[in-house]
Image 1: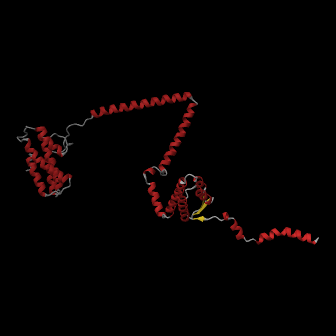
Image 2: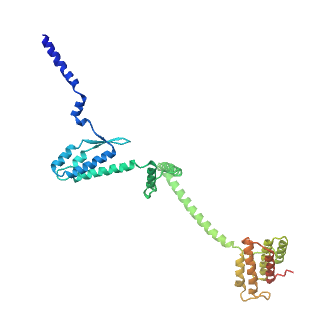
Length: 333
């Protein structure tokens, strides 16, 4: 009886005793798939190069089959940002007994992607920003920008007006008589506006033709008064004003003799051009037109230099101006 009980106890506890006596290292070694190698980008690139060279040397079907069997189910790649698991199934699908070209192309493409990732990983942050700004500044991204405040306001205003118009016309659709009345009112208002614009345009042209400025104006000073004003300005030492008054004394003298028209809207250069145009071949007060043109040209040049160009006026300039006035027939005695 005791022997039977002892045998039963041994049968119950024997598996647990044997299982505790086996080291964990032996269990781990018996299943090599439980331990997976982890690559970084550099080591994974080296592994791909090794596989590429090995695949080029295995052209026979047996070698290709051995190469396929040696591939792990996936590659584990770790980067500073995160870890990736890259399946080898696409590579296995590219392997066939006839050719390994597709598989080699797949490995080369994956290797190129790794190399570009290595270059981007080693690129400084400032250089990356510079390259990104350069890309965004190209022609393809010219219109890519966030909307401005004015653009947003314009879009909101346009959307609001659109909603109001939709409500308005929707309301009109429920009142056909009112819609017809509104249509005729708008039509008559448009026709009236066009007619008013045409009328104002035609009446404006008539008024401009009616109120043409006169060809002559009445002078307010005689040449003697202008000459007196020139002498007073010279006595004050204001030779600039003296030359200006002396010039108009000469113009007034020529207007009184009929050499020039009584029109103060002319410019000094236009006065000079009118002498030959009005009195070609005629004589006024026993003086030929050429006798007036030379002194008037001298007065005009001095007026432009001193009065309009703000040149310096001296006593010698005023004395010469008086001599030109006497040549025009102004008696300064």
